[in-house]
Image (cartoon, rainbow, N blue to C red):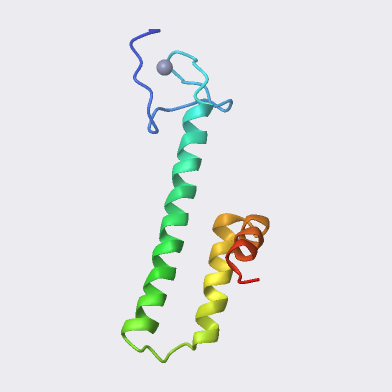
Length: 96
Ligand SMILES: [Zn+2]
């Protein structure tokens, strides 16, 4: 059977994450799927943030304040960049 397997996200695997047909270790597919899920989640988070900025900036949305928007941006950026990178970035953008 080896060589005739086409592995994808849908391939059935045993409890060790190996192909039930040829036995190849398919954990890398699960890892890739995990990364895709993470990218997707980050994309949605960014989209939410940009939409919030647009609502406040262009649609004068009063359901949240500018301060709240700032907090949302801070939280979102920290989540996506990581706290340390975010702090470094803020420092590099702050006027002396
Ligand atoms: Zn296989």
